Image (cartoon, rainbow, N blue to C red):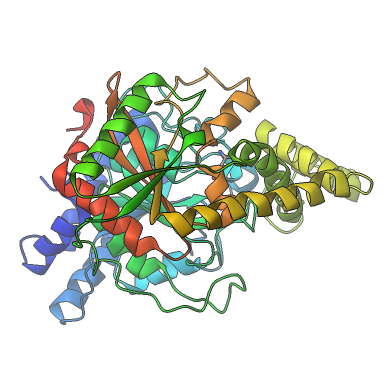
Length: 485
Ligand code: GLN
C-alpha cells in the first residue's frame, strides 16, 4: 500500500530502499487503471514513459544522485507543454497537439528526477470552476461522483484526492488551484505571480496565470515548490529572486502570528456549514497562539467584475494564435482563408471559451477600451492596495476558499454568473499577484471544506508554515474518500 502515503513519506521510503520508483510508479499506474474510469481525472496516461523515467530515477538513486523528489510519480495538468506526450488544454482545438518542447515546470521536475504518470483533465483553456467545460467530459469528485471537483485544475485535484497520484501540478488564474483543492479535500498553493515560470504553460490571462503544487499536505507542497520555483530567462515576467528552502521553516511555532479575518469574506453568500468549519479552524489557530484580528478588504465586491473584464480581454488576445494554421484543429475543406479561420475556431473552441473571447474582444474594442479595460485596471489597483494596507497589520489573511462545498454536475452549467461567483474569495489574490493556499479543514454534509490562507508577496514560506502547523494538529488532510481507500 503506497497510495495512502504522503509524498514526503514516499520520498523517505525511496531513500531507505524500501521501495523502488518502478514499483511505486507501477502501483499508481495500476490504481489509475482501476479507478480513473469512475472520475475521469486523466486525459492521457503516459505509462510507458513513466516506467522508463522510473527506471532512470532508480539508476540515479543508485548512483548517489537523488533529490528528495527522485522517483516520485506525479501528474501534470494538461496545460503544461510536454515533449512527446499530447497537451490538449482540455480543448478539441489541441486534441492533436504534441509540443516540441517541455514547459519549464515540466523540465524542472524532470531534472529533479520526478516521474510523470500522465496529464490531467481540466476546464477548456482553464476557463471554468467545475471541469464541465472540458472537451474530454467532466471530472467527478471522488467524495461524491455526482458532484463537480471544482476547476479548472479539477483533474489534478481529483487524482490526488482519489490517491491516483501522490501530487500534481495545477495553475491558478482566478482560483483554479485553490477552489478544486477545497472541493476535493487536498492542499493546493498558488504562489506569488512571477515565482514560477509560465514558459510552456498555455496562456489564458497572462497577468494572472500562475502554476503551483497540489498534494495531500503543506509539507508535500513545499517539497514540490522547491523544485518548481525560480527565475527563468524564457519568461520575462518571472522574478529574479533567490528560492528559499520552503521546508526549512515548516516547524516554526505560531505564537504571536497575526491572522486577519476580512469581514467581506464572511458575509452574505457564504454557506452556513462552510462558515462553521472555517470558524472552528480559526479557533484552532487561536489555541496554537495566534492572534485573530478583524480586518476589511473594502473593494472585495469588485474582484469578480474586474476579473471578468481583465481575464477575457487577455484571453481574447492569447487565444488569437489558435487560427487553424499554426496549431491544432483545422476545419475540413476550407473555401478560403477567412472560412479556414472562422470554422477552425468556431468548431475547435467550446461555448465558454467563445463567450470569453467575445466579452474580451468587446472590452478591448475602440470606444469601449477606456470604459471597461482601463476602468478595470484602475479598480485592480485599488483591490491590490486593500491587501497592502491589510498586510501592514497582519501576517496572513484567512477565510473560506469557496462559498460552498462541491455542487452537482449540471447544477450551474447554464448559469455562468453563478459559476463565476465560485471564485469570489480567490480572485482578488490573483488580481493583486499574491500567494494563497487552500488546506482541508473539515466536512460539511460529508463534503470537504477548504480553509484559505493568503500571504504577502513572496511569503510562501510563512503560508506553508502556517498550513503545516495546522496539519500537525488535525487529520482532515489524511481522509480518503470511501470508494478509493
Ligand atoms: N474559475 C475562474 C475562471 O473561470 C478561474 C479559472 C482559473 O483560475 N484558471 O476563469
